[in-house]
Length: 316
Image: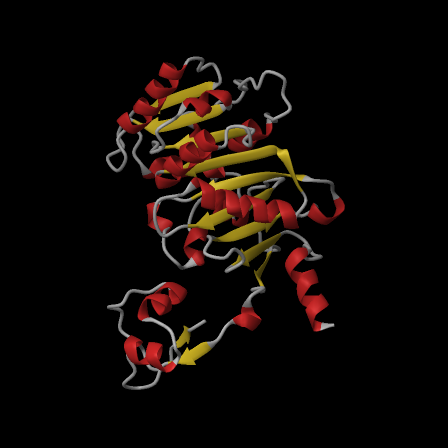
């Protein structure tokens, strides 16, 4: 019975109102992530899927950091997003293949319509968005990249997707030239009629985070589907530097949303060691027939980190 109860919890959505689910260690060597299910998820058909990629300031191994701004914070503040929202966390630059592992996990376990799959991110997340879309242009219905750039060599796939790039001309963290170069590379590939590129005069880096809280952002994304015959970009939605001023005006914090932790399917296979006084990584590794490198990888730590007595270390 315990096994079946665990599987039902892991693989089936929970029966309640809007939920925010912390998903840790669900993908071997993959990203941890937040998963948001809207109010009517249980009683509806397949929902759109929104992927949010955070910037460098939210990087690391503390998943709660990803709630500081962006789509997850937006739904917490009361922005109604009628979609399943997934927000992974990375400790370094975004890797498109590892992002796709998260998407594959979500599609296997939840009701999502992959004809309505949208990606948006800011700063390093803007880079991640453009790299991901360029790598998987046939998967993404529409995307929005804020104050980012790109690292993949071939950006021609971006021309296939309705794409909105926004960058502030006063950005000193990621200069607007980073987006300019992406647009130039797209133009060199050919047809850029699916692109909207806005350079907000005098707008700095952090200001663009307000885009995630705008109703217009999601109206624009949801106006596109992969099944659209020409994949044309919708130009009926307007977002300007002035629009950003009112981003929070209609929001009231969602106090009904339940936050839960999804059980780790590999918990039974894990072994732990409680650090004792005088222990070192070397002594723990020898005692448990493992290596310091493996201990550091399992516990997401460095060899030079100080061990605190009583700390629980994963050793397998």
